[in-house]
Image (cartoon, rainbow over all chains, first blue to last red; front, side, top):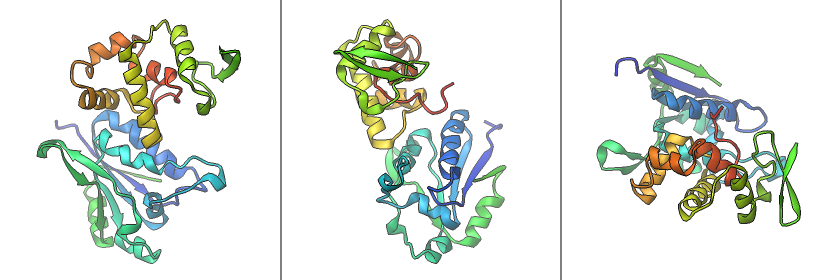
Amino acid sequence: MSDVKKFLYVNRKAPYGTIYALESLEVVLIGAAFEQDVSLAFLDDGVFQLTKGQKTDGIGVKNFSPTFRALGDYEVTKLYVEKESLEERGLTEDDLQEIMYEDEDDDWEEKPSIRIVSRAEMADVMADQDVVLSF
Amino acid sequence: MSAYSVNGQTVEHDEEGYITNLSDWSKDLAEVIAKEENIDMTEEHWAVVNFLREYYDEYQIAPAVRVLIKAIKKSMGPEVGNNKYMYELFPYGPAKQACKIAGLPKPTGCV
């Protein structure tokens, strides 16, 4: 299909404290119905959105981090995470939750959705898009 | 704000019939909501409702109808997991109606 555009949702903020992270995820889920080529980018404090073991009881809001694991069902399978942003916050890939998708073109094999990229690679990912939405 | 009445207790719901407090849900309440929707709960209805509750429990969202049908097809087979059959079970929309009966919020992106 020629009218498929490449959409990148850029997430730069921590998961709680502002509504940006949750709103971004909701827009992604709603937008998935339009069958575009969707990717997500996580940088700066946005990398905290994907950390595992989030507990929100103390701040009285819903922990929406499990919803990232549903993205594969919505055919959103590219989650780019910037390596430098992780390092600057003392995080590694092991601190992030495991997010898998089933590859329709490869006998439904389970593959990881999270791709760790360098800052330079992230710039290339962004340059490659038709639409970039920043949250 | 109005309410359902189940076993002598009242359970609040919003203007569209989705319950306000997700922990108020029970199987008896599901039967009451289904009745309001003119649905007789069969084993197949329950299978979809239970599936939705499990999905919500795991991912914290009610899936879009397209995702729901695909997932049902995978877990319960193509004779259940297809548009026609799902709309026979839930004529006003499988995601919308089944979520209401399952005590979940309206699916994200559903207007």
